Every structure is written in C-alpha cells, then in structure tokens.
Image 1 (cartoon, rainbow, N blue to C red):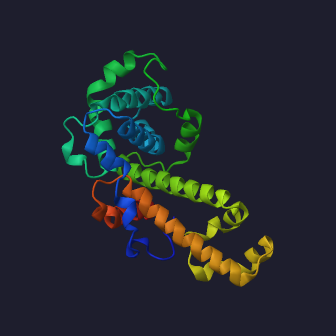
Image 2 (cartoon, one colour):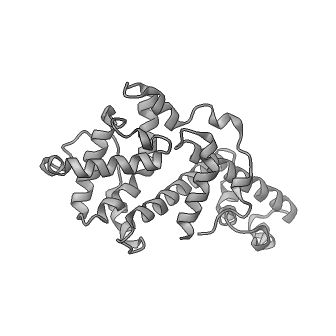
Image 3 (spheres, rainbow, N blue to C red):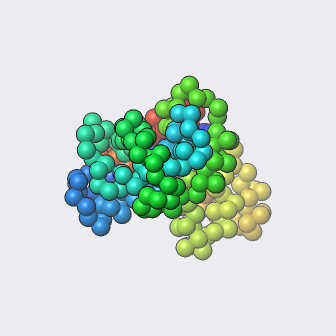
Length: 250
C-alpha cells in the first residue's frame, strides 16, 4: 500500500494532540487502576488486538487456541498487571504489547489451556469470525511473524484513521463526499480523476479540488494523532510513521 501523496512526516503535528495521549495516560497511572487510564488502555487494545491474534496463529496455534490465548492475555493484561517487568518497551505501545504477549505465551500457556472458552473475564468484545477470515487472506510468511505483526499493526491503524475521518464527514453532512473521495487519500494529486468525481458528486471541479485537499490534510492530521496515541514521546511520531510505512511496503 502506498503512503499518503504528501509525506506526512514532513507536516508538523498540532501541538495540542500531544497534551495527553492514551498511552501516556496509561503510563502515568502506572499499576494504579483509574477509570481514565483503564478506558484508554481498553481503547488501544480494542483497536490493535487483531495483530496479536495473527501473531499467535503464526506460532502454530489453531484458531480455537489462538482465541483462548488472546482472550486470556487481555483478561490478564487489563487487570493492571501489564506494566510489570517490561519497562524497556514502554515508549511504544506497539512494542510493549508484543513484548507483553510474548511474555504471556512463554509463561501462561498451561493456565490458558485450562480455562474454558468464555470463562475468563470478558473486557473486550472481539470479532473472532472476521479475524479468522482475515488471517487466511494475510501474506503466508510464517518465517517472520514480527514483521507481519508490524504490517498488521499499520493496517489496523489506518483502518482506525479512516473510521475517524468517515465519522467526522458523516457528522458534517459530507458522507457522500467521503465515499467518493476516500480512494484519493493515498494517491498523488496528479492521479485523482477530479472531473469524473466532480460529475458523480454534482460538484464544480474546482470546489472538489478544495474539498479533497482539506480531506487529505485532515487525514494526515488524524494519522499523526492516532500514532501519537500509541507513543510516550511525541518526538517519536515521525520515526514510528516511517517504520509503519516501511512495514506496509516491505
């Protein structure tokens, strides 16, 4: 998948998105449970659970075992045990979550096997059926599960960004514009068929160019914001963005 037409790493992010991110909120709470940090962590997990499921499947686990393990992992992870002994990975939620899962798989397999499916506390509602179908469409490269984890993380992040942008457009009465223009978000301006799109939307071509420009700008802002939510240091946004594009293009 190609990245955005204009390099988002070169666009300064709005300062206010870094005041409090979900991951810094979790880290600042430490092991003390609080409604805000618990909610922030749950939102992060809800967005990025699929890469974990796929990683477990690539360890040779069956669909059923992977479901049990991921569910048991989240039950453990959301019980405020998630920060213990893993300080080195606290900078990036992506690295921290994968390290936590590896730690869990190395130490919790027997306990997870002993649990009945659905027996653990259900903190997250996960779509297992879609996950299995998606897994079979993923690149068959079991030799490098970490690289594929990064790729799936990047895809999950982009899905989240697109969903946020779609919701904003719907709220502003621009759902039809988004439907026709979402395919333009990751291509060069020169490749956008403005005349055809304008005709389909019943818009003047010049007005459409302005609308698409604003939509692409907002897409880049949301992309950087979503990445920031998974980092402890805002200075890492550009670096993380480059890593994720590399994972998508690799």
